[in-house]
Length: 177
Image (cartoon, rainbow, N blue to C red; front, top):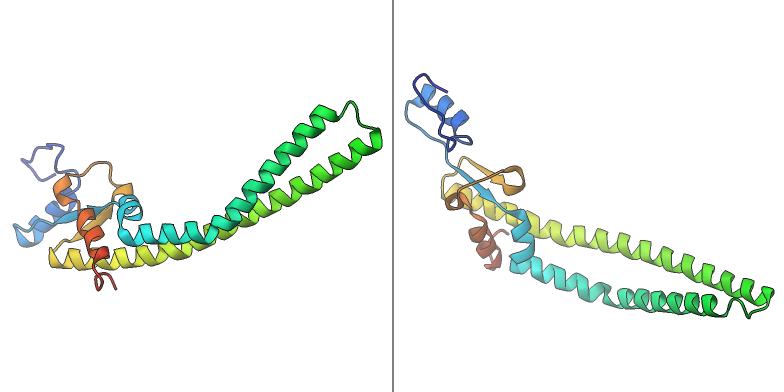
């Protein structure tokens, strides 16, 4: 802090810039803003469209996995219920079938999760790129010196939150492109 200044808790984010700015220009203060990527990925129409697209694309495979899980559950219940009355060879045969189906289910689940993760990354990278361009446009228009993503900010005054404007900009046909 400069001599004679008191720490009031509000100058935590701006203090380093204000100090440097005062020494150079005498009165300039930096302007800051922040944006919530989490809110953008939940609330922006482009993000919601991407999520719906993924749900439609992966619904058939998800239903297939649900059917396999139900089949495994029934096989396990049947094995547990009838194991005592089955011959040893019949029990081993069913346990082998159950093991094979369980491995198939595990492999399909892993493949599903990997594919979904890859596609989610692809879809949301587009949204994030557009959001970053919208942030840049808003920051330039409002003459902001820096915009923080809220995941790195402990607290910020809502008046510097530009998330709503970014979400609105992503809904406009030409914004962020």
